[in-house]
Amino acid sequence: MLNSVNFQFYGEDGGSQPGWFFFTDYMKLDNRKRKFYVQSKLYCIRKSRAHPDEVCGKSVLEIGAYDVNGSLRQTIEKMEPASYKGVDLFSGPGVDLICSITDLVRDLGAGICDVVIATEVLEHVKDWRKAVSNCKHLLKPGGVIIITVPSIGCGFHGYPEDHWRFEQGDIKTIFSDFDIEELWRSPESEGVFLKARRPQRLIEYDTSRYKLYSIMKGRRTLKNRG
Image (spheres, rainbow, N blue to C red):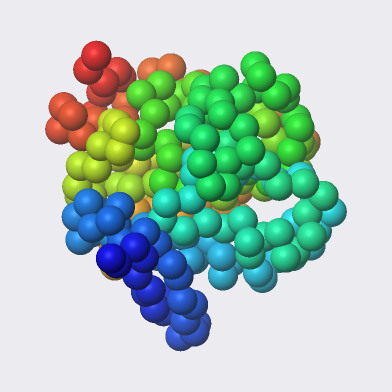
């Protein structure tokens, strides 16, 4: 029985990296989503290798760490972080702590890590504002956040839920209270990549009236259904 499949990823510099993902979960995704899953995960790996000083001796928290489609953990642990903690809703490979992204500051405290990674997570969280706020406040001043999210045009993938789509402008606005070091939309698939740094004094951007595209409603809205 085929359990996993190998993909070859070609980076912006012409280089490539192999990546392993569970075939059964991968095949549930539409073609556009498959492309961005592969590209986003492996792009994060390639970018993180270029900045080991941001990881070595630092505390890393990966949100959505359940390893069913590839993980950054092994690559980042080679850079010798002081700690690496994986968080998800369910117990499984790569998960050290079971907790919702919206409860992380409550349960772990604020300013507890140097690096936050959340690849393909925010679209699944109904209360995206609280999720984003938790990500921001988990970081120490000067800490780095790495995020990938799907944008409009990426098909529905309800595993376990699917709510939101983010355009590059959305991420730029939502993280306007951070120092954005890299922000781009993939030219090959519907998704956005962000690398940003928390300022020494965080004045959090108010997202309470910000409308995001709901894949359930097919338009921008303050709240999703349900």
